[in-house]
Amino acid sequence: MNGPADLEARAGELRRRLAGHGLFSAEPRPIERGLQFRVADQGVVRLYARKDGSVTVDASQLRDPVIRLRVQNFAADAAGESTEPVLRLWPQIGADESGKGDYFGPLVAAAVRVDEFEAAGLAARGVRDSKTVPDDEVVRLAAMIEEECATAVEVLMPAAYNERYAALALRGRNLNDLLAELHAAAIGRLVADGPVGVVIVDQFSATARIDAALAACCPDIPVVTECGAEGRVAVAAASCVARAGFLAGLAELSNEVGIRLPKGGSSPALVRAAQSVVDRHGAAALEWVAKVHFRTTERIRKG
View 1 (cartoon, rainbow, N blue to C red):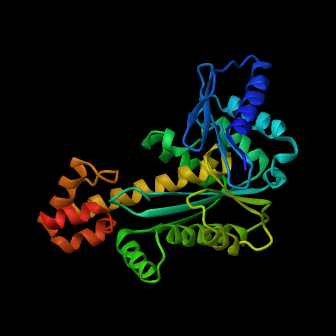
View 2: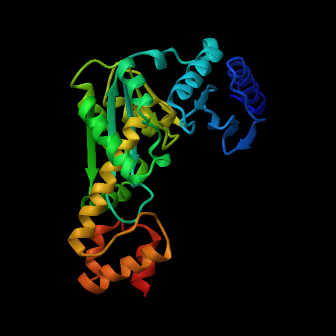
View 3: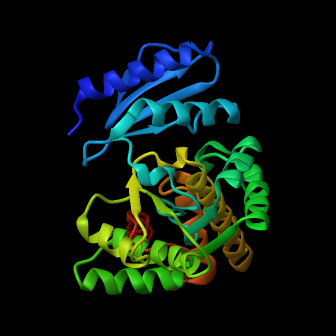
């Protein structure tokens, strides 16, 4: 297992390689499960220690797409034999989700398949972790990705989400199991549609049960789950497609109830919107627009 010294050594090697190309960086500082350091005026690079002893490098916060790719290449070279060779296989399927932490709107999982040429092209045109992209740009990027790459999207609107979540809870399962089901469905559609070298999923659970569920959808194809996987273009592309799907679902629900439903999991504006839904359409309407296991529902029902 990597400890702080291992992460610092990897960060130091990566910073030396960047400096050799005129990209100077600040001293690393600790973050949850890893380290990060700032590169010139580009943004930050993050390093995470994985449970299997490897290190994930997330360059998705860097502004220049060419520099992002350079950092990813340096990171792979610096890792040497410790780099998982499967991560250099192509084509790659990246998978990510959106809406997990949002009270209103759907839960969306997306998978995108890219070859090496497509990945470089997407990065050069600004495809990156959707959490760093304004909503209007996410919609534009997602449309471009869906036009040029093989994609699969699973959208679970709140009514269906609440039903499936409740059924899983009765079996002792949780939201991560539901996410695994959606990811597996999206990934499985792409696996059935063409050759795949490796599947990469942004890690949302560290349990063997979830890893097994993801692997089951693509037998004989390596599946890698890692923290900060949005730094890889395939996963970044999936994050944009999933986020655009969430935004579309949220807008659809807002139109149906005649109330602007905000993003997020808990805020005064969100509580006011939920109360407006109840006042206008009755308490049962929350099942149609919201993930009712959130604590916000209890607050509304208690008045």
